Picture 1 (tube, rainbow, N blue to C red):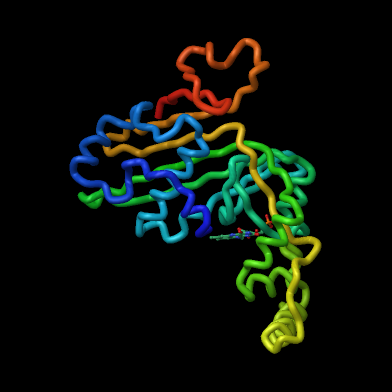
Picture 2 (picture 1 turned 120 degrees about the vertical axis):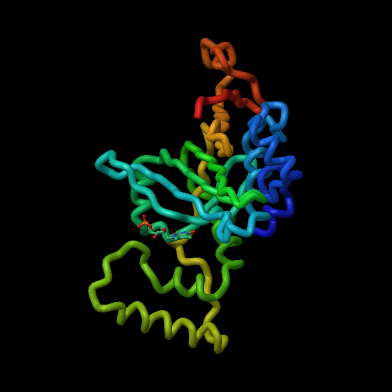
Length: 255
Ligand SMILES: Cc1cc2nc3c(=O)[nH]c(=O)nc-3n(C[C@H](O)[C@H](O)[C@H](O)COP(=O)(O)O)c2cc1C
C-alpha cells in the first residue's frame, strides 16, 4: 500500500481538510475543469490520496467487492485494495473461497469505496467511487511477491485456513494447525511459502463513477466509461458526453 501512496499525483482540493473557503466552493460543485485528470484511474489516485489524509477514514483501502452468484444473484463482501496499476485494482485471497468460485463462473465484478469526512463546521460529508469491470487473475510472480511481503500472521492464516469452508469441529483442527505453524515459523524450522491456492485478482474497469456529496445536497456525479474506437455510433457523439483521456469518455449525472 505504501508504494501506491508514493506514486500518487497531487491531491484534488477536496475534502481532506475543508476550509471555510473550500466549503463555499463546495456549494458550486465540482467543475469538469477542476478534475485533476480526464483519465479516471489518475483521478481515483488523487481521491484515494485525499482519503488517506482524513482521520475519519481509518481504513481508506476498504472496498465492497460485488460478484455474481452462480444462480445470477448478487454477492458482496469487503476486501482491501492492495495495489493499483494502469490496468486496474488489485486484491488477494484464497482461491478456494466463495468469491473465487463465483468469479470463475462469471468474471464480471464491481467495487465500491465510501470515504467520509467532516468539514470545519462539523458537517458530515462523503465521497463514493463505483467501479464496474472484469476480474482477471494476477500472475504467479505477482502473487508470490505479494505473499512474501505479507506479515507472519497473514502467511500463517493463509496456510492454515481454507477460506469460506464450513467449520465442523469447533475450530480445533484449524487452531492446532495455526499453533504448530507459529512454532515452526518462529523457531526457524519452516519458511512459509505461498500456497498454490493463494493469489490475487485485478478488476479491470469499464466504468468508474465519482460522487462528491455537497452540503446543499446537489451532489456531483461524474461517470467515466471506457469506449472502443470501433464503437459505432461513437459514444462521444451522445448528448452530454465529453471525450476524456486514454479511451475514456465522461458525463455528468443528476444526483
Ligand atoms: C475491513 C475488511 C477487510 C477485508 N479484507 C479482505 C481481503 O483483503 N481479502 C479477503 O479475502 N477477505 C477480506 N475480508 C473478509 C471478507 O469480507 C470475507 O469475509 C472473505 O473474503 C470471505 O468472502 P467469500 O466467502 O465471499 O469468499 C475483509 C473484511 C473486512 C471487514
